[in-house]
Length: 221
Image 1: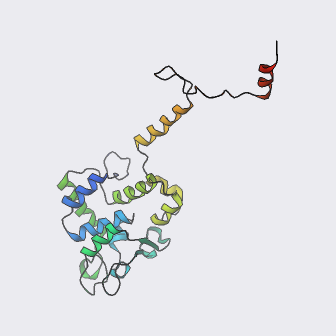
Image 2 (image 1 turned 30 degrees about the vertical axis):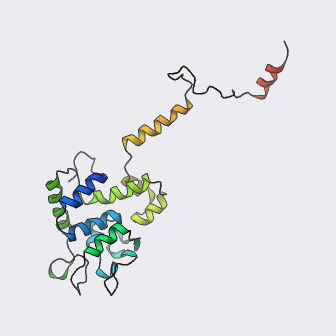
Image 3 (image 1 turned 60 degrees about the vertical axis):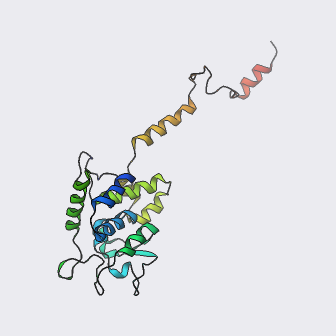
């Protein structure tokens, strides 16, 4: 559910993520499913359609990288491989589907767990802990925004997100009010206005003189 966000899913804070995973999501499967959405910045359908072999080796050990197959991506652009960080590895180690099951999150009749069903589980989890405006896309937007805040180059983020171009990616990344304030506050370095101590922020700096100005100031009257 997206409320007053101009059609964009809510960006989650660290405390909201902690609350959702500790109290909202009730099963290891659900925590692992949405953990993949968060730690791989992927879409919920991409997580739901993962195969067991995309995440675990034949002995049941978690692979170094998770594979998101081209055929399951939006637009079927390219296969992506995402490094599995320790937080996600913990979730995957605690969760393992039944032996011989094709899909990581099996659904009915041998199919994968449906994204619509995952959305319903998330909505219930959010109601359980009182979170508003969250959708399955919140994990992807949160992850991409966090990467941007950390100074990760957009081209690198695009490699992880699988967006067709940087313009699409930038639409996902939220610019926060405090970031705008910080950017504008930085302009105070340019100010000729005196501060509270009565000193100009430019005090102590030599004025910039042109060659003609310098000549005029050195000539005797």
